[in-house]
Image (cartoon, rainbow, N blue to C red; front, top):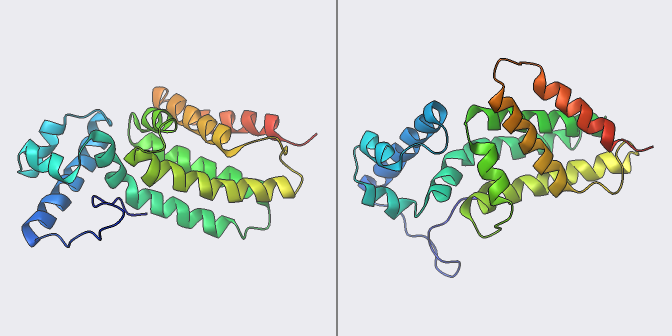
Length: 197
């Protein structure tokens, strides 16, 4: 799932020690900036805080979505691992709801992430879609299929629509930080509509 900068035919060369340090500092500063200012934080400011020039940032991350994909990779890996755990849960529908709730919590940490994920869903070639969106949809598909096979979720529900709904809920939560129960209410409404009749 790692975001590769090399072509698909050539293996990535190991980074020199100084390049690796720059890369790690950029990720650290970008994560901090995205939490504090949202995903539209200034790339120039991120580079400055990391102690490098903007050219160095662009050598590692050709665009904002590539940087976002790299920053969020650790969290995505954790959500994928959680989906694998929940795939063995005795209540498939509850497992799906719990996983979607964790996505909402994660996306709400970074202002603008939900919007970026919704936009990236239409571009399968973007770094954000490849590193975050596609693996998450695959993991969600497995949980959704289990819930459908249990008879608790309608068979005509697709993972793309469900992920868009989840991102929309996360966006609503981001816009209403004082309403601590909004995510649960909206998820409950969503699953009322998903239930098999």
